[in-house]
Image (cartoon, rainbow, N blue to C red):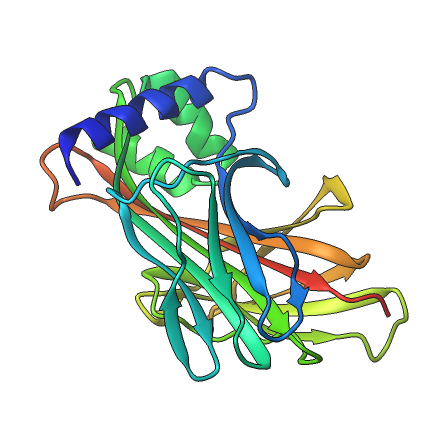
Length: 266
């Protein structure tokens, strides 16, 4: 990624950090989670919190992958850099997955702002590492990647997800509504470099009730379950952060994963 894009990303990050509750979530929002076979899908990238966010202009300088994975193959999401909407087409029946991966983004925060950000995201281990390294009073220098997915169905197919080889990703493994007409048990799996990510914090939120956050932690197999009520759009998010030893301009590397999908009415 070139330096102007990194500089712009840093300025945006600082601007968001100045708000009372920093907005960290990034997600793909299709104009519909179920479409007719052959219909186009409008895909919008969003940054904010709990489905309340602003559309993010597409920036091809940082995009590593922006595609629609269909049962028979993968195709690029069409769009122009600088525009907020991209397009894909579900040309065959069955489940489809919109995939977005952006790399080389950077974030520079004051020590207090970085500490607040780590605390908000439940990264107590990073706070402790900074203290042990003597960096607690130093600015937070971070590089980050965005790993977003959205599950879309064409025709009468049920929503279905699968691993798509993102560096960090949330995979929807199943929705069980057999025991309750209102509640749905959602099972998801978090993968880091394709392997189960244990002890990862995952947050679920419904578009219909954004004030209600459901938090969970993955087990040794990277799985987490949520008891979710209500039909409509849902979003799962997770954050992984580690030391950025390979980058002289950053101390931390974080991977932001999100997954959007829809629960059909019972």
